[in-house]
Image (cartoon, rainbow, N blue to C red; front, side):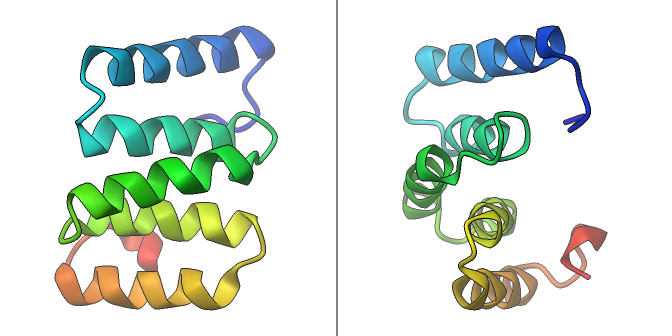
Length: 102
């Protein structure tokens, strides 16, 4: 997830994420990864990312990583209050997880 990646690397990341969803469109981690690519690599396109991340969370509501990815997508779109709530929820689900929560 190199945000300074050149166009070729961004295209490759996007292609892999889309392929993962095409292979299993019921896999929440693949769906949220596609959302993450939209947010980080494709000019912070939260209008595409947020619905994907919300779908992933709905599929697996107790997955703290999915909560975090939705939080980041919301944060990029200016939805800080909901984003912060989701970080707190993710910490409650897994207090010893990723240092990115901090």
